[in-house]
Length: 323
Image 1 (tube, one colour):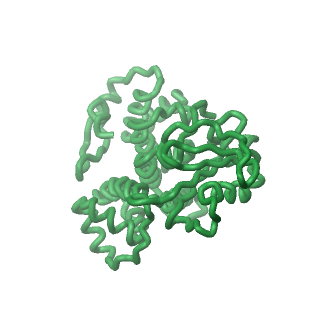
Image 2 (cartoon, helix red, strand yellow; image 1 turned 45 degrees about the vertical axis):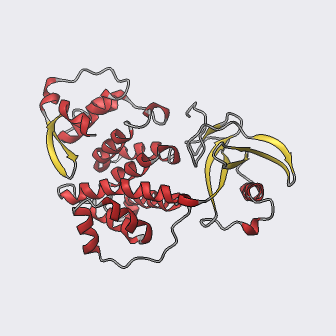
Image 3 (cartoon, one colour; image 1 turned 180 degrees about the vertical axis):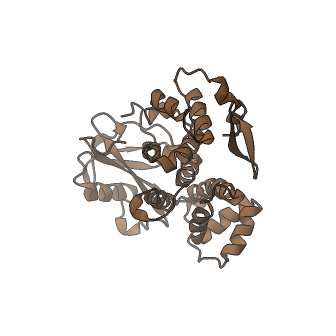
């Protein structure tokens, strides 16, 4: 469990603990962020519907019939422990309450509700090949088939377009966040996690990197996913992708706030038969508190990296700047 103050799910500012106060609608445990978002706590997890209604009434005192979610208001929520004022990242934690945030959508925050633009997958692939991220972002907001195409293009690591599709997912995630549509991204993460299970029958070999790109766009909105992402390393076929995703996130967040890095486990990975896993695990050790001296033979191995539209092979001690 992290010991860090929760942040607003809209702007990322640290929020104060919600206070039990008497309002026109009765007693509510609530607070307000500087950005204007209102948050309401349901401390037990058993009356979430009531807390959600309270949040909407606080945001719209004239009546909840004036609230059109996804049009003029958006709601975001997170598991929360009221006693300790912490977000909950472990589902078995015995004090799972819920914290609901609601905020009016204005200007650039308004969700895109345009009809789907007609485009073929072939045309979309051309945009990916050319790394035309501005067009990809606009298209993705107006045609949600684009996210599915990105996922399908990411499967084959040996194909350059796979790396470009993963890069494009980061741009698409930023566009959705700016449009205020976080739920589409969370649904995408759920599908990617499902693709990594035996039951799905899919081949989510690089799903961890796609998830990493989504989180990287704004880590404060997806903090609960980071430990889930790290847990996927337990499956042999996903180790490399998880290492790449987590290494990318380490550029923006302090990993120790979210996951427990086992130095012995990483040292074991550094002896893996796969050179990319060897190199990536040693680079992760360098970004953590692991006391590990890089063996000379590891320094000399080469690993695959992606940079500005091309893949390159680099020695481990030269590769870190490309992550």
